[in-house]
Amino acid sequence: METVSTNRAFGGVQGVYKHASSSTGTGMTFSVYVPPHAEGAKLPVVWYLSGLTCTHANVTEKGDYRRACAELGLIFVAPDTSPRGEGVPDDPDGAWDFGLAAGFYVDATQEPYARHYRMWSYV
Image 1: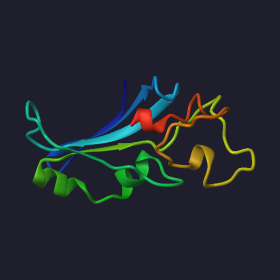
Image 2: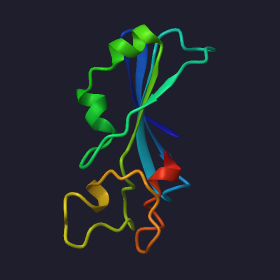
Image 3: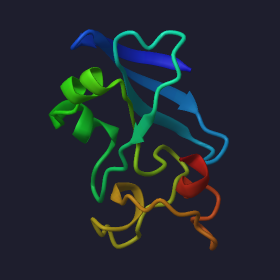
């Protein structure tokens, strides 16, 4: 796993990471906010699943969740919404609501999408 960035916020750490996903067969990016005093503690996790045309970055850059997570002791995870990269099929018509830009948390069952579009398994 590769650390893309880490920043301090409200006593905790906001990190962005890249890794190779066996579910999607691609590199994936996600962000995690870890509140203060988390080391060695068992804390609840909030999974934020962005919608259409989004990535992990939408809520990470624009969201106002860190203060509440720090106060309540919550870990906040925001995965990417779809597989990306070479070899990942996109909508041949370029529709904004299907393919690389779409956030459907399901596993595709038909080709050419079944190999990479396995977001249910990924999450």
